[in-house]
Amino acid sequence: MPTPTEPNTVWSIVTQVKAHRIVYYTDDPNYRPPSEGDWYYVSQHLGDLPAQMTPANCWGWRYRHGEFSDVREPDEPARMASLLDSNRQALLGLLRDKIDRARAEWAPECLLGAELRALKLQQAQAWLRHAPQDGDAFELLAGVASTQRVTMAEAARSLVERDAAMRRGLVDTELVREQLARDIREAATQDDLLALRRRLLGDVLPALSREAALPVNPMTPVEWDEPLAASHRVHEVSRLKTRLREIVNAQRRRLHDGYAENEVLLRHKAKLAQALLDNGGDKPAGQDYTLLEGLAEAHGLALADAARLAMGTISDAEAILRGSELLKDRLSARIERMNSLRDVQRVQKELDVFDVRVAADAQEQR
Image (cartoon, rainbow, N blue to C red):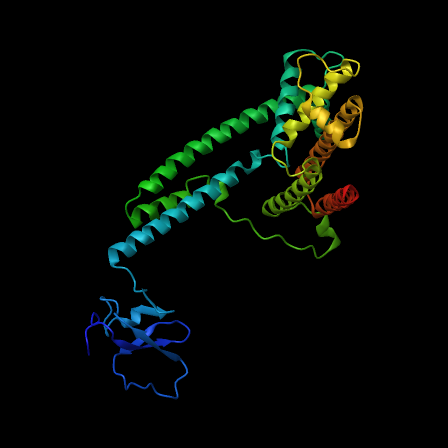
């Protein structure tokens, strides 16, 4: 048989039909494969073969579209390094998942929730700093107090305390995350990674490592009013809070038209509009009214009418935010107070009504 480097050699390459693996090759021009086989395919190749390919290892090569590819397993050091890196990435993913779950209770439940949470905290701090005066705006704080059935002062203290607890929780989980991420990246052996895995699944935030029991279906009327098992209640609370978040987010998406920084521009237009209307419909000196003038031209309106349109738009947006936030607070509290399957069913029905209403509003807007 000629060497693989001999030029102008025509090779018959026998490969598996499905896998394209090479099972045999020869330069014999009289070679004819058995006619009864249907699992192989014979190709003609002109020129050199790969220098590393031999009759003993050709099974580790593929031939497809005139190209050879080496699909043999890498040598042991390379294979072990690849396995170590794969396990390292798996542990980093497990760490991220566990930290995310630990922080889930602090995450905003709905779209723009962080902004509203900051407003609630601001109102709570203002209430605790001084006795409120007539005209002060505390409607979000009042919503929390009404939902939780507590006084305004108690609601304010609970918001401040929750914010402090959230900050402590974020700091604690970040310290854990940074230390473990460093240890995982610096692990040099599989034993090191195995020890870190045991640590991740056991010592680190152990409450998140326990699998919750599967929920049960009620079989008798009595079971509807029996207290839920702790694991069952966790499932139902998580499920209904997720549903509530999706519905509120769907309602608040009406405020977005898909353009980046739209909220900033909308508020800027409203600020210009308010200044113009406060000035009797005349442009105050020293301010650029290009945005408002463009709105007026686009709608064929006088500048003062365009200002009223901008103010109406921002008022509608604020009304949606306030209304959805008050409803979210009320239903979130209902979900937290659930104790039986009957409670779960009642909250579910209320969410269904809320969902239908949001869908109808969205359809009307189209």
